[in-house]
Image (cartoon, rainbow, N blue to C red; front, side):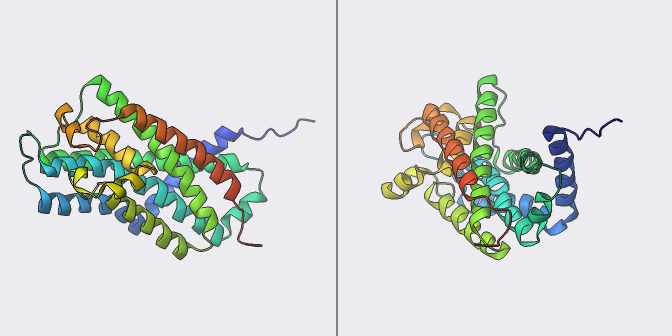
Length: 270
């Protein structure tokens, strides 16, 4: 008598990922907010603050656009996964999942696929908007493209893991929405996303922002989209790419630990 062999964890994760993407696009309001909000902020702030930077061949609009491309993936990873996970728990989807043969790892692989898909789409969309409206130069240099790749991967990994932790400690969707957006918006301000150059901010704010991934993700993306001379506008006067890699890697490890410690299948007992 033959026994039924279940698909592997990764195969189930791929199937789950495809289902997550389909479900994402079925909620029109979620799609519009996810992709339109960061781009709309870029257009509005870039248009209002766009001016030539003294002694440089770039504009403040270009600096802002480059940084906002980085902050855009924070929105699609940290904010989205935190709210999504809280929703799945509140609706009982996680509790039902626990009673199925599909392992939890497959569930998270599906979420990672969704985050990767939406984050890539976000970067492409915001790069096009920045190029068309603010003459942002799209990178073609292999070194810059490689930098964009590892900053992107470390950025979405760290922010996704932190989003899982956020979605695990917030009891309701409304709570997750409030906390996620409060953290996201506050970090954008103190990380120099909305203020260009970042040296215009009080040093104490930047020092606080330096403990969190948003500043380093945005700084990494500025190094990709802006000329080398623009590094003089950073707090350290350089792109500090080794520090970008170090901080984001540390947050990947910290995020994994926090996600493992806080993850809950249901709100029962909380």
